[in-house]
Image (cartoon, rainbow, N blue to C red):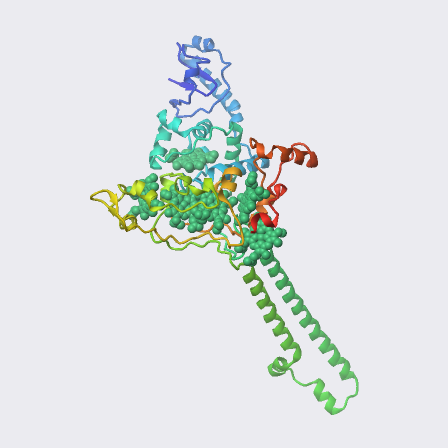
Length: 474
Ligand code: HEC
Ligand code: HEC
Ligand code: HEC
Ligand code: HEC
Ligand code: HEC
Ligand code: HEC
């Protein structure tokens, strides 16, 4: 027989249903399939009186009441429809990028499954909501689908998003649906100086230069055509005059490749084209001086963030402790690796390198005197003239590592994700709100800001002096 229990609603076909309405202990998401294998989504049926069903004991009556219920359900189920308006999709994009992107792509796997058409494969929209709110709870409830994907992803636990409201999740689904419909993006050709999400500050000059160059070439072609017309018109004009033999010869001298290449006009044009191409190359070069975006050197030990931070979900700050305390995020010392690797995967030659660096004696379980640090190749490197502080951004500003470093937890080899140019820093300082709530340090400033810019207006980093040269330059 059929029985369905929903988050806030509850109904049953059982004739003797004592644990019926408002039984909060069963406010969980237990689905059982009907004989016809249809699935329910949450609906507002709590007003259907149990008693009414109790008296429909005749099979035919039951049948019709089921039909009746189904039609009701399909009506009320509308409230679970995934929104398709632009506002919802935009809100969903932001939420997705902020919370989910680190582990999920829409098309293709990363730490978790690709989310394209997840609203179709998951048991229900309500299931997705419960899952996102607390996936561990859904798995613990023994839900078959949940247990199955949990096992498939090697029991890596998805973060619980208790703070996301149902509406937020519907917006995320709106985004997922829009992206699903769009299909996977075709890979774009990389443009050397243009930033990816890391920074768009310098994509402008390169695209401008291209347009200008194409324009110049077009103008040149036009000039050549006009000149050709002029020459033939002049010839015709001179033919009508009576000219001496000598002059006639000059007018009708044949145009050969040699005369063209020796002509001053031709030399000028060639010089101009070569000159402007060279100019463009120099400008492009200047824009990318010191820009190391995408830099991914080979490291002395094949340490993988995808494995450690991704699959095993070790917190970034467990290894990069400095990010909470001060300027440098710091690279972990050999000790931290040894916390695990004195026993994990010890037979691997890569791990043996760690042992060698720690001068680890596996017999006596002690570190020897000949310890030497592992010489990791530094990837991110600002010039000495610039000052950047991690804890200011991570602790005070509340910015995720991934905003600046990309999804490190999906990288086997770390690469520089952002441009790390001044334009990149300044751009973000112009756009990003200060986290002023709950930070007494900003109370007075926020007050003054609202006096000047109107109530409720948010302070950007630039409003607290984030664009002052001396804040970033010694
Ligand atoms: C820390 C990584 C992580 C984050 C962040 C994360 N997820 Fe997940 N998610 C997973 C993993 C891993 C799974 C696979 C199941 C498992 O192992 O728990 C999963 C599974 C899912 C599923 C089920 C997929 C399926 O195929 O049925 C949905 C839906 C989902 N996540 C949505 C989200 C949404 C929405 C967000 C953002 C609000 C999010 N996840 C954030 C790691 C993450
Ligand atoms: C188990 C320890 C460990 C964890 C966890 C870890 N890292 Fe790392 N990280 C390292 C080591 C070791 C290196 C140096 C080798 C390399 O570049 O791969 C490094 C390098 C980096 C670099 C490049 C540093 C440079 O040279 O410029 C960044 C950025 C980084 N990690 C960010 C992160 C983020 C973000 C996370 C969390 C998602 C994280 N790390 C988690 C150990 C760790
Ligand atoms: C919190 C525990 C933990 C810490 C800390 C840790 N690792 Fe690991 N590491 C693991 C686990 C688990 C594996 C996967 C073992 C397996 O594949 O069976 C692993 C695998 C590896 C591998 C791959 C070995 C192979 O041959 O497959 C390398 C290399 C490695 N770690 C390097 C490091 C380095 C370098 C550090 C220090 C910066 C470090 N690990 C810190 C838990 C840790
Ligand atoms: C606002 C952008 C931003 C955020 C957020 C950020 N970083 Fe960085 N990170 C940088 C920049 C810029 C550098 C280069 C710093 C330098 O060369 O002085 C850097 C360098 C690093 C380095 C190598 C050099 C060092 O400082 O030891 C590591 C490791 C690192 N970051 C890890 C992290 C981790 C882990 C987090 C999150 C807890 C994080 N970063 C958050 C911008 C950021
Ligand atoms: C992702 C956005 C983002 C990026 C990129 C970024 N910052 Fe910031 N920065 C912030 C935020 C947010 C704050 C405000 C933190 C706070 O509340 O004090 C801040 C504050 C600062 C401050 C303190 C300003 C003040 O008046 O107290 C300095 C200095 C700074 N950033 C330097 C840099 C440098 C240098 C870079 C580039 C290498 C950079 N930032 C890149 C977001 C960013
Ligand atoms: C938010 C931080 C920030 C602020 C504010 C800032 N800068 Fe910079 N500046 C940087 C960073 C980071 C670099 C290094 C960029 C690179 O290596 O490409 C830089 C580079 C420079 C350079 C280039 C040095 C070289 O080696 O090419 C000059 C010049 C400069 N800044 C001047 C200024 C002046 C003048 C101001 C005030 C109007 C200013 N900066 C404000 C972060 C900042």
